[in-house]
Image (tube, rainbow, N blue to C red; front, side, top):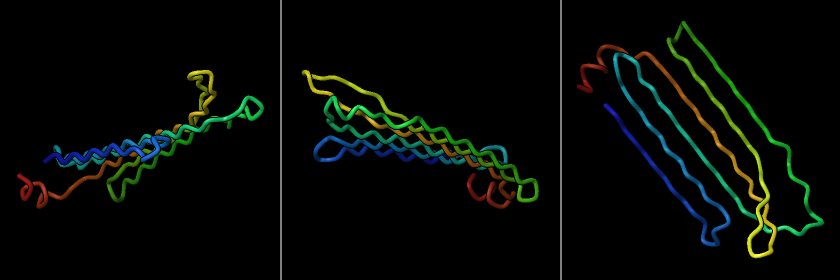
Length: 113
């Protein structure tokens, strides 16, 4: 079994964009859930406001043998400057990835087939 969900959202004033996807797969007794998010915001700034936030990286990995599951989470935040028609913009972005792996019981495997 495989379920996919995809969202592409843009704000009315086009200053924010969100792209999200989720995938659930049951294969060989393991259910894997993968979620991805991307958020981007654009803001016009003046040259005297050029103070870019520091980049950010967060990684978490969990392994639980008793419950037969593993989890991985990663988040990256950053920003860049862009110039368009002589105007200066600060673009903030954030990527996140979450992966969950869990053993599923034989009853659920037979039911999904």
